[in-house]
Image (cartoon, rainbow, N blue to C red; front, top):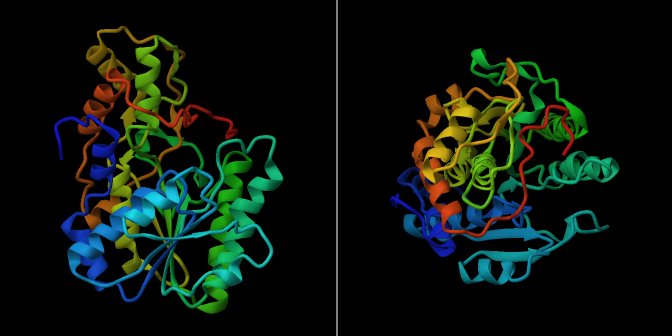
Length: 342
């Protein structure tokens, strides 16, 4: 890992650098890999990671990404990286029949931002489409991305919910995400499809994420609300690495795995650290609540080991990225929301 990241090209390289464990997982995978919803925040770097890992492992395998590709040039960039692309709106009639069979499927489709005011579309994206996917790929192994938002608020002192903690999502977005899980569980039971549900909480790179949100507010002297005073984060490459390694966990009924960093970070402490890096006193408002939306990563770290990139490294990278004016997605996470409205 580099000491600092200076350019977006370097960032993309870091996000798609395979670990030996990912290369090993790709060498043992049987057949092609289909990524549904590859055009989202995590999909492009996941596709490149899979392609590079397969190449380094010396195996011949198609990596196929499916998306609407509304972002100009993304399909071309993935093609240049050796990823095949299929332009497809999965809500259109007959779309699923056009997709090729694949023994290994990663489900990345989802809607979070702008869900408030678009509740019907949110449920269509987050619950209806998963049912179609689970039915269409009943003979595949499926790694489906979910979210830690399906858990209720839990005491910060508890370390967050483990995978067997009862779900109790706050708000329609999180409820629709539980609907996604239920669809995969239903069809897994009906067809015996091996599935693993990845409850992610929160994957970041330098253009997006909780740390960028805090750093940007400190840098611009914008008040930071401390009511959601704690969070979990994981570097996006490390999260994507687990997505590819998690095929070994696919089962029926579906397995569940929390994927996040092992540390519960304090938003106040992180803001102070960014303040030191910038020479700026953070503007902090409110007080930390005793509860937060958290996930316990103990099962993840026991199975796969701790993520290689630490919170300290992410903070250093993010502070430098903000100082040099690195490009961002300009899409706040709204992690501080306690009403579940996004």
